[in-house]
Length: 391
Ligand code: PLP
Image (cartoon, rainbow, N blue to C red; front, side, top):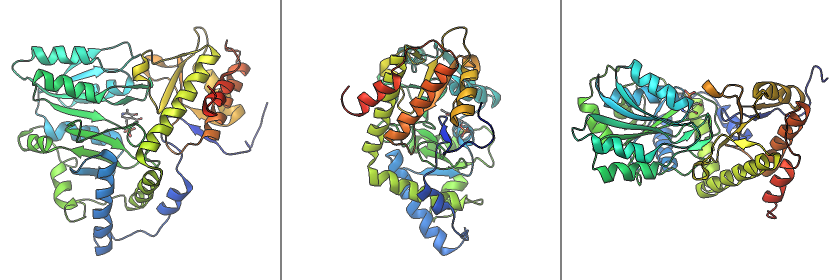
């Protein structure tokens, strides 16, 4: 049994926070800038422009010094009024948390249930919208990539369903575990509010949230009556126009963000997405070779950033994760809510290369064997074959 120091680098493969590249760490490690001085204003205006490119938008992107949940709250309180109906699809744990938040803020969510094994039910959303001739539903809220299940919903299809129904609701999308890893097109898909966080595809520590807003969302703000103070978008937008912030911005995270976007653009955003697709496919091939099942049961909804793997009945996913942490110095994600102890989650997003991916799958295969979880050997080999182009 290993004891004390664990040699080698820790493998952080939870689905976020992700590994922060050394270049980004070095950028964060710089002297604090006066957030009201001329140099900061210039820097921040250029940074806002870069952030818009990540969302594929020409519209404003607001940056709160908060985790992603703060941006969720801001999205709801800036656009909605007490008692407004919002349509939500419960695809997993994070969709559930957003639903709970809407309820606590005094909204009336209409919830479409799923089996947590596939993406948002576009037909059920379309049906609800068609039945809502009085336009009681003010927003459709969806989680692009459900981190608890490894399921990616189709934003383009939900948009098309809203257009087909001629429904004027706002479309709000959580891209916390997809932004800068899975293609997202804010303007093309006519999304009204899109929420992101710094700690996943953007390869930064937690502490910055992003909110891309449309003109329609900004218009809704004029009549929305939920109380808002700190989360008021308008104070941010007014100050951001000249490069400043109404309260202290996370200046050193901005340095890191500036470099992280440089790195994404040097690689090319489309290449970044393709790399995530490839590592996700390598992971699924390993899971299949082990004879295990992914939580996502719908191939069209497979996530390119996280794979949740079901352990056979009678076995503990948490005991497996604990063993892998102790013996192989690797952190994997746990099962959330009803999936507790039933799945483990492999995060394959952010700053990740082929060899790291093979190491992750090697650690899982060692763990499966040591914990006596029924499986077939050969998962790592299947991933190597795929990555080598021989699959
Ligand atoms: N939404 C999704 C899809 C997430 O993955 C997370 C966190 O992992 C959240 C929301 C909550 O974000 P945060 O923890 O940054 O507040």
